[in-house]
Image (cartoon, rainbow, N blue to C red; front, side, top):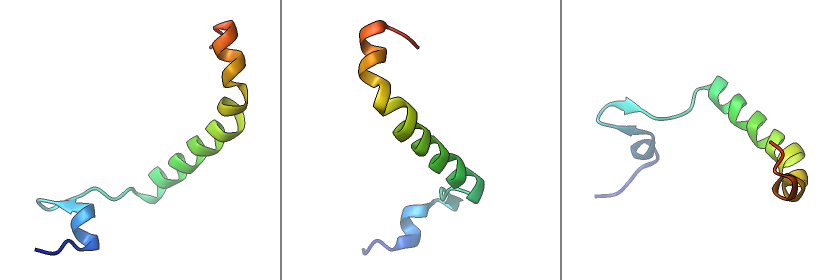
Length: 50
């Protein structure tokens, strides 16, 4: 049995591929994390700020 690209996106007839809106939200979350969370993580850890 060889896995194909479509096998990774579907299982039992269900499609697990993200919609375009979900992909946009994913990109936005990654951008926010990269720009806001990571640069300030040490400060948040020290101060307990949320």
